[in-house]
Amino acid sequence: MAEQLLGAYKKTIKDEDTQVVYKLIFKNALYSLEGYYEQRKDKHYCYLENLTEDEGEAEFFLYLIAKGKVLPIHIKDVAEDYFGKQFSGPERYIQD
Image 1 (spheres, rainbow, N blue to C red):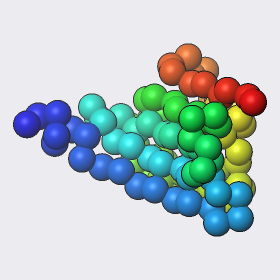
Image 2 (image 1 turned 90 degrees about the horizontal axis):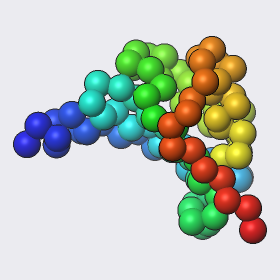
Image 3 (image 1 turned 180 degrees about the vertical axis):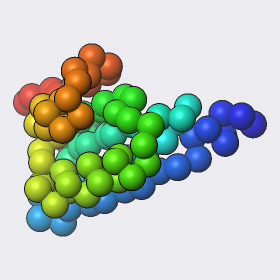
């Protein structure tokens, strides 16, 4: 029951031109971000945990990368520049 309450927030934006899906996830009082190509989620994928605890900052960053059409391979770099910290959590990008 507690796990359901703590992971209750998700916001998704899909860019129609690039077919990239950006997903903001709230879990355990922190926001994480997922980005992937809709039709190739198994090959082109990025997941960054614990970006921030601030909802406004997390949503602004989500809209920023969606508006800039940031590709999954670049999300980690943009997040590190924006938040001013290194993300060592699970992040992957598999090339063909």
